[in-house]
Length: 329
Image (cartoon, rainbow, N blue to C red; front, side, top):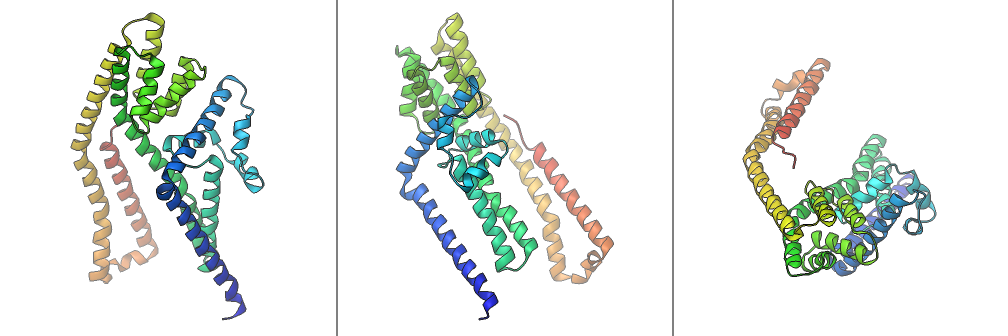
């Protein structure tokens, strides 16, 4: 082996070691250390939530809790440069990720550097390195967005059950604060966690209105404004809160059933869009294998232009069909 290949081999060994280390950490977080990770996640949520409460009433100048979440050195220099930090921090919270904002930035930068090194140093292709860097760097954000959608969907499914349990607690003579706490103890995450958070904030002296506003900020669903407004109106004007929330739970449950039926009816349209999008690609590959001379025209400059135009029309048609098959809740 010549001297020029030695750095590439050493870098490859280093990347393999880093990948194995990250895999072991992932297994520990999500399998081996599940209980500890869940406890650390809850503490981290409370810290971020407390900093957001102070940012509403005081000045957005930062708090001690915010500074404690930062890393020193290089990470302390990188994290302030990230735009829309509060939105990303809230996205991590809604996804229920067992990591801080700084850890998320570190994972993104690390994967981007790994992709750039693989393409530029190992594969000796700088253009491919840029593509791999962008693709691997987007993996953490794509994972967080996916987990956020799954957690919000689970919250919407559990929400009627949580409201009904709160209604039963109110009918039994329990106060609203202890009703939230009972829901937090009986139900699993995310409804149990969020309702338990409201109970903890109220018990620590936070006003109920602010606690409900924080709940609506954390869980920005279509049903949450009706829930929070119903409680606040009842506290100002009076009335049977258990009956109000019971009716709300019934309406939410029926709405979920209705949208479920609609999604079932629109599933055929979504499947048709996927089939129609894959059909030209599959047919083109088949022709390429069976009759290569039929696709030789696409090797010319004008043929490539028509090929890209056809691909763009296929993508546009797929987007339109998927949009027709989607429904906003």
